[in-house]
Length: 585
Image 1 (cartoon, rainbow, N blue to C red):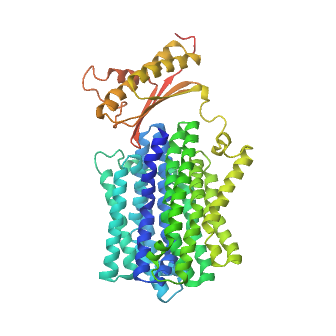
Image 2 (image 1 turned 60 degrees about the vertical axis):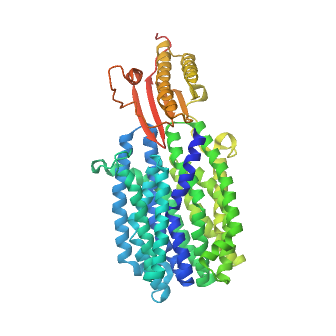
Image 3 (image 1 turned 90 degrees about the vertical axis):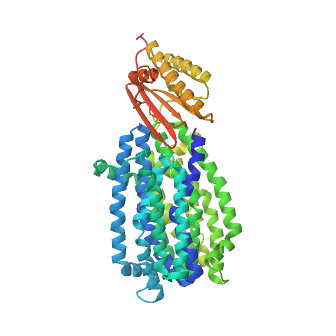
């Protein structure tokens, strides 16, 4: 089941990672093609502020993935809706404030970015800031809606939003440079409008009756907003590190390569951000699924998840790296069509950038898992080291020996040093090699249940249902439980699994999966059912007649607690049953 979820989510997460970088990439290409090298440098100087609104959106999006992943793991739809309502409210307030501040103080901000206080570079930087900042609510709103679309299983809608944004941005950029001649302000405004288009496409679902999330002003709370921000702080650290990195790297390359150096670095970092959609996608999958598995105390599931993500890191990193190595000249020519030192620097830098993709993917998978497992401070530290300290230090030192070429090693050096730091930390903390027996998970010894108190079964047929029920009953008896609780657990499995087979599997004749998990806790038993059939809530099911769904009603009556959620296109049902001593019959 985890393998299937990772495959399903990864493609959509990679697409969602393009929601910010794609517009910036298109803008940069258009700027280079039609407005020239100075305009590219102006865009590069404005980039830290563009990343700042992305940092705010990413912080909230990550907080949503963590907080709502936990509430979904607990089976609380009401708490998840509170997270949705609070996220929408705070996004509106923060993004509007950001837009107002940038519009009012765009000239001082352009000076602070290193554009000077007059001349063409200053004016172009100031104008782009003004145009782009108008889209802050759309940009941030699109980012915040992404994890909710993922949890609602609306991958198709997410792709539609990205495509709508891309087509709109290209069309408006062309109109700006060929018809309206709006310069850098027009380029920024084109991106702003395209973000609103993406947000509007996503909003169609959330405003419809079929949405699994519903906004309510009454559910907006300071406690939930605080939880979203605190849960997203590590991602905020990551994006804040990017802001610091771009700001300082602009200074380093400007001192060595002048305006051409800034332009080359802008091309490298812009295309690098797009290439990093694979690393962001892997990190997003890790954040969402780790949150669910951690709250289910599923140690083996976490090990399998990180192992799978590391495999994808190698495959995707090699593939994307090969693309950058082979097609770097063609990619750079999209930005800088004429031969010269700026173009040569950008081609070399883009090829060197490819070396950091695999370690970056692995770092994102592991550090995001730490975030939801109670080690947010460790994630924050890794983000700061990986995103700012290591790459800036490497660039500063290497440029002293290798000139401008040393600066292009910033990404690969930062990621490799961060990966070494994680390995060293795990070794010092556990005394084991990071890959030995899941040491890299850094889980407490009492996390989850021991293997002898856990039963997991995959069910594909009615014969599997019967076998799983009998095995669960024997499992209960072997753990010192009386016959009554054994019968109850077997009955729950028979009724709920049979209902899924009959009304889910056989309804559309497609291949489906059902997993059943039985946990023996000190005071109670937990049963978790998870399937990929159509949405069905047995907890709140209203019978059509007196004899309708008798089995489901019987199971709900036996359960001490029952929680249902539908997320990631999966039905998730958790039942808690009281335990009893072996002497009770």
